[in-house]
Image (cartoon, rainbow, N blue to C red):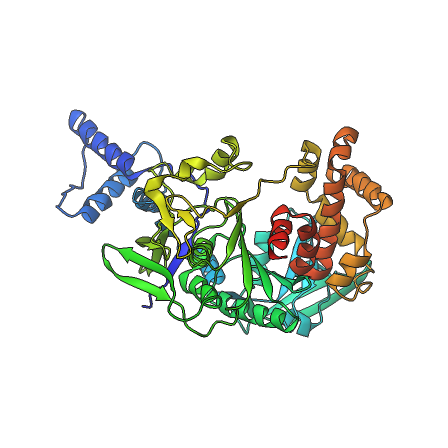
Length: 537
């Protein structure tokens, strides 16, 4: 089978309740108990020298003799996961079902109908029909509500995103029938032939100022480098000579997608990244002369959610003196995984190498067997104040490296930005947090744009023309209280007034023009973006 190297920040928060050592200890306890208080048995257990036989016997013993009923299959899978996490936080066992969902992100497509939707008031509301998709060909429109799928009612009854996706996804060429509500009372039946739906990894790309482009990358799939090249070429045609590359909250993905993007900025023969492991051949990825952005000035935005492939891009451009890095210290994942399929369709994602930036940095942060502590890194950064000032403990001489132009960079725990920008907490309040945690913004925006979807020709027009007035704000506050149980707090409303207004406009822009529209609103008040514009000017 083909090997795929993946750099991914795992965000799975399952607790691994039964480690391997506990399983073995239970087995030993059962054996001792059996000798002290023998019971008749028709089976004998013979332990060979092989570890797989011993584990099989232990699990069989638990299944046959344990005091309570045990889901042995689940226990076995949790034991494998715990075993792998004792190696490092990113080696992992993935079930066949979970693997399918993960591969959709890696492959950059899935079989489906081609809509974006939100569940609002227990109703599936279509916010966007993807152009040239099966849904568009079948006649679905933005604003439609889906009442039933293949005769199964999905409106009400606590419908979830997962349930809807399961019903709408399927193999290409298969048919799904949906019942729609359009407007107030027009019910329609539509038959949709599923097709291949692309998973875009670049949700926003536009000219943010004269000569300055903005590209946001959410993940690194097989198609990301091509998506990036196409977006960059389009912006260059619009006059882009400088670029803001936003990698914040990007957890990573396919290694070659990262190297392909870096390649666009460098001339031929520059080192991008090097991978080394005990059981693999050392491999150096270098640039080619084919890049279309070799003369484009670039700023890269990172934060604590930027991991693995994001850090390869940021590290390579920083080490080659090719970009200014702005934001906060990145996550710190410098391990490379390889997928190996098992016979039952499940998957072992095993760490096979470390990667090193062009100056020789390994940016993997320290880890122990406490995987929960590793995953709670963000909370630790908040508590120690790193969101508001640089943590100088990572700047030690033993981890100091020098770029060709003499810039000092550091390894040992993420990419340290050239320009630090503290987290923006202005206007935050518990009232605003409750509004964000509810679906008030999304639901209000969906209702607000009904009958107005053609009022603005483009995201740029909307951003320039639309203002959230006091009347709209008061309407939203009353709506949140009456429909979403978020009680008005006058004092905290004054603190968060501007943030709430911006959030209303952002969600309306998202309903009308997807993420491209939303980022046009967000970026006007984004400190890192504004600092990037300042540096590029």
